[in-house]
Length: 123
Image 1 (cartoon, rainbow, N blue to C red):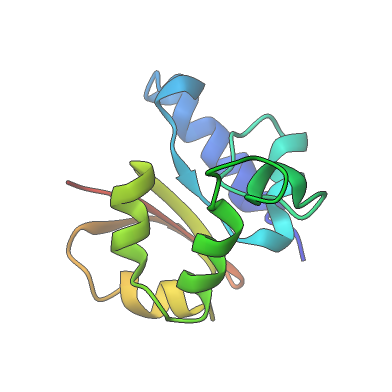
Image 2: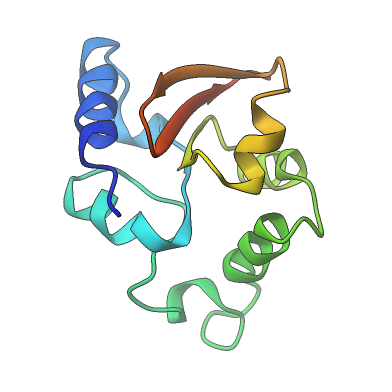
């Protein structure tokens, strides 16, 4: 399942609000990161290869471990967001991240469809 409509909306949102790719620190889930890259959207992580995200291949890089910790509930999403300066998030409606973000007033819902939800993260 890929966020086709959500990506269309996100691209339009960034264009309409003159948000450059350098200013986007998007949290996304592992399974559809490669699709977002295909659409030209900067990602937190993607499923095509673990090498860029693991300390075994890049010393000091813990993106994959951090993602796994958040998606399993071992650390809070907000700890990860602070660590990586995340300012937007796209995730599955039924994800653990969404369960917490929808209750957090720092997470402003921008878009929603049957499968995906997009938030802007306020500081």
